[in-house]
Image 1 (cartoon, rainbow, N blue to C red):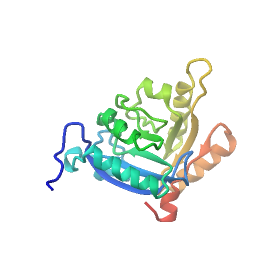
Image 2: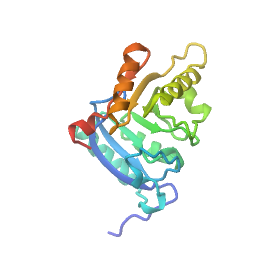
Image 3: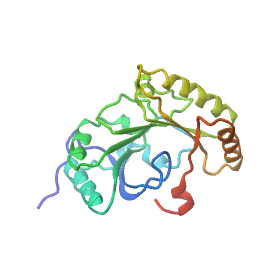
Length: 214
């Protein structure tokens, strides 16, 4: 049987894998990860820079990705995480429709600089000061997670939290998390001290790196 030909709706994919969510509110839960290619945000601390060039990664048929998600669900995955790169640099409507048929909740991890497409049960927004997120993402995110490298990031985090808190009446604001840069001990100390004295915030750690898992 010849391989399925890629179509315009098929996303460029860096990798897929079944592991534990390592960070954020859902840390420690079994999840199927789909890492999409393409990102022009250009964060210097990014640990997945190989994902930035979209053209360097193959387009994967939607049916194949759904089949992988279904297998992961059978093996214990509780939800699907669409991450990147910056996943909103690709249209996600067809992908979410294909994955939605699997029956698992769909989570999105984004910096918020692209147009929101697709349908999600949980949106993690990780805004960057050099490329501010769209108002749409600030208004609908469930989780606001800011990477901390220095004191200026704490001020930025508070500004983003204030913007995200301006929602429709009756709509709760997002969960607030500060995540120190992985390889910066000073950032860890700064973040821990801030969370200790600012109870609205929660500490997020990249536990998958501590554990040595993907």
